[in-house]
Length: 281
Image (tube, rainbow, N blue to C red; front, side):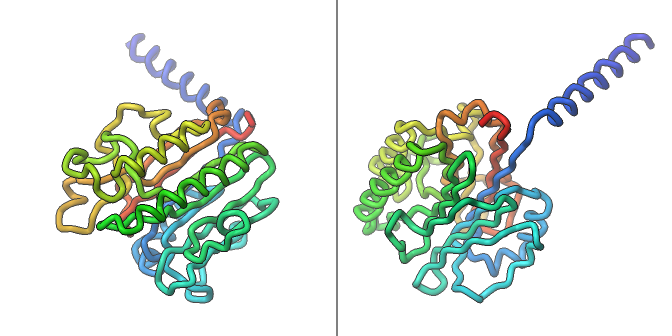
């Protein structure tokens, strides 16, 4: 009996220490989700997930909307920022934020980005870039455009990073390492897993950025963020990790955890999360 009492006391003390620890820090929660058509996703539990996570900043990609096609029921606590593609039913990004940004940019600097792929929010201590990277297409017909875009994007990110730390989130349309997809060998050279695309990700990370999921879980496999709509593919977890939170390396001390909510349906992608202690910035 004394051992049992001691065990309960130790658990209680540990719980109290955990509560005290989290009271001493200010946790910021960020979410990113390629919804692959927001109008469809809101009928499949989008609002439930939004309310459940209660994120400070919630980013989405591939909204496939034009202005006025949907009225989001977010309440007064979220401000909304949208970048629509000119082409109807295509691409598009949005950010819902509880924190009022200092400024908002749409597209790469001085570039309207007609496909609505980038929104940059500037906050007191960091920049947040929500991005939907162009797909090279199955036949790689857009690979050249994709690689040129990657170079411009990297230059843009480095320019911002010279001013204050940067957090990048979104669908980057690349599985960086073999661990990031179920079947790497048969996919060598396929869109999203070409040496060129993977090399551009290596260059971006090499410029002073952290893949936050790999920062916490360097060897964890079989955790993906996208699955084909082909029959039984998701059930068998034949997926790719192509959605990321990247952060300036100097933000490493403030990172608490990165997570992939693989159980959340509503899109062919699932949401990803990042938690930070913003008192350490």
